Length: 275
Image 1 (cartoon, rainbow, N blue to C red):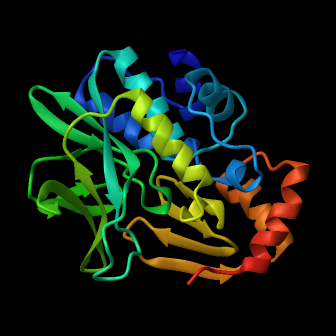
Image 2: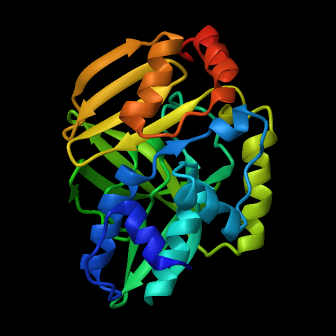
């Protein structure tokens, strides 16, 4: 793991001891520097989670990625610093209709153990990404630089899970349910392949992009642009033209837009905002 290159990418020059303060600093900076995006899926390139490929894309090429890339990278960084880290999986509930059947486990998160306590770290959840680690087994409301969260007990088909919820203007909205038990790297290969190929995966038929800065959250769902402040309040929301979409990806999200993205961006605008 080339830690110096990673820390240059996220703009971090602080301590490297495996402490909670270090984890908090990295969790705050990573989502600002490395956006969430699924452009390569729509471009038909596929998603490699081989470490050297992830490093070349997210660090070397200035690109972003989705959870298997983001949290795979973060896991290796934390392990290189001496943290005790487990890869976990979660069922995504964000934007799911109430009463919808359980979704498969498809979202990678991390469990980081510090002084006997497990902290949830997640650098790969789009426009509502965590910007601070959360106590995984505490029921208390927890503050972060971008709003309040809580994690409560729940279950799926009789199996105990922990449900992560975000405070959206006084309403607790579920993000995902974390399953207990570590996953091996080989398990993520299968889940990643499903995510970028299966017709039921929304990443195969819609664009999802997000960046969280110290003062704002920015999200693109196809051509619908949403800008929220740190409290979650909407500052701006509108549909973009192709030219505006390209400019937003470059200037707001910070992606190095390539010439061959144009046909995909035109298709994204034609799709419009998903229901």
